Length: 306
Image (tube, rainbow, N blue to C red; front, side):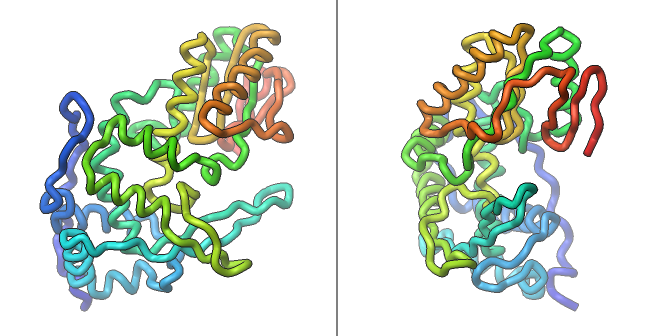
């Protein structure tokens, strides 16, 4: 029997409202306690996924779980932790395109999960209600409810916006600046920097570039929300009606001209944060014509899960 099977599950710790102001200092002994690492491990195991470039699977890591977690904790507390090289693979998308996906080592996923759970509440308190993706207590059902509410309010002209290669194109300098607005702890900032600069091995062409906030990292959805929060703010301040799920964006308005202005405003706002609209996948559409969003097809007064 593996040692991991003999371990009692650590208690579930509910997120707490953080104190006012940014996170200035974290005690590494507390941040990377064995209980924190075990909680992170349980979440990583639940998600599963393929092995990283080092070839170690979740199942293999679990065969000597306590020893592996103790070794990882020692590296973190002694300042010796370095992320392992990321394996970049490509997943076919509808239409023939390929979606790059970074496969991280199990150990890196665990550390990212610990940091994610630590800093998420500091950003959650500033995120706007129009953001739904990868947020606690929010999901596709809430997106559907929001879109229907806009439809019932006669906002039937829709700017359906695709952000061009969003995760791959998050500017690292801007991202670090946005993170620093809520997190000042040197260790956490150093870890985020290390993940953004992790080396990548491209499964198709060999050694590649830096990882950035590419899809596949545990921390990437939170970093993307931190980054795109500044898009939300710019659009909402101008009175537009926004529904965003990660990098999928709708702006719903009553008049066609207003929706056209929303599309232009989104392009300008994205340019300010060094992103751009994909003109081939973005369009202005009416509910009567129908559109697909986050796996749901909306048409007239109906919607269908795909």
